Amino acid sequence: MEKSIDLALNNFPTTPHSLRAEPSIDAPKPEIRIDLASLYHHYYFDKHGKAPPNPDPAQFEQLQYLRPEDHFRVTGDGLGNRKRVAQK
Image (cartoon, rainbow, N blue to C red; front, side, top):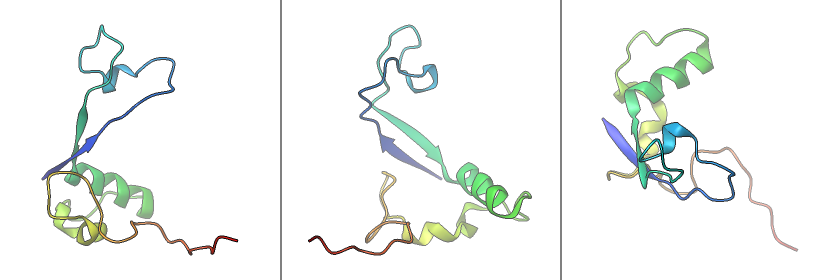
């Protein structure tokens, strides 16, 4: 399963080759695709220090917060653990 992320890169001296639509042209792709199974694998490895026992992206606990659309969007306020600070 994949999700897409729209890119709007600016203020960088050059675009990394991996984010270019055309390697010889310094212009970013309009979007990139994210493989959720790969994301889950890296997340689990970073969190637990070992490969997941079941690399099924359905086991990715944050998957429940992704909206059911092609773009990589989360529901509500996002994935962070943050407190709202009142503006003075």
